[in-house]
Image (tube, rainbow, N blue to C red; front, side):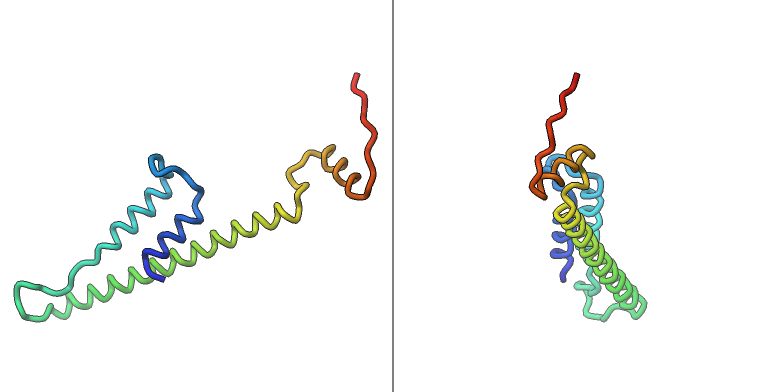
Length: 122
């Protein structure tokens, strides 16, 4: 996965908001990806001499750190997708979880073919 696909996967898993009012989390993700998408150039175009060894090592370390951050973001996107799927499955297979007690009893009775008597309120 590239940085662009990882960025899109992260945004897909975040709650949807309009582009005019993004969440602070979306702003932070956009800021991090904007900052890290600009890779520093390691070659000096004005001279034909190769860059110093230290500069090459720093560039390699920066690239390694960038790859680790992308891998971490990819794992977070997979985790967020799994959590969303889990919540959907819990809601799907336990539909009465968010119902009040009376409504849950009424639906359980209807499931086995009974209709509860209508209670008269004074």
